[in-house]
Image 1: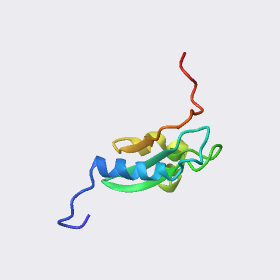
Image 2: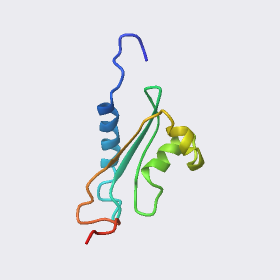
Image 3: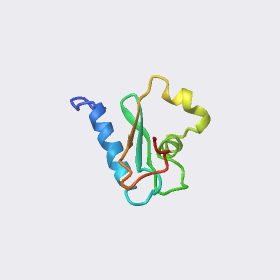
Length: 99
């Protein structure tokens, strides 16, 4: 980061994940909209959102955008934060209902 610029905070990255997830509103039924942001060294290295039911989930898209694969999960997340936001699934979702 350039000198004198504030380092992004957790709230900043969560806000970005929320904005990404909102892009899937109304398009992911029966799944909830989800946004994902992967951060390494205080910088975004990958992000994604769930675009439609049946499509890869947000975290998989973020991994791919970061140049990683599902097999790299342990390496990617070791000492690096991932910000995932699941927006409310209005009217239900694919998750099992509790009885």
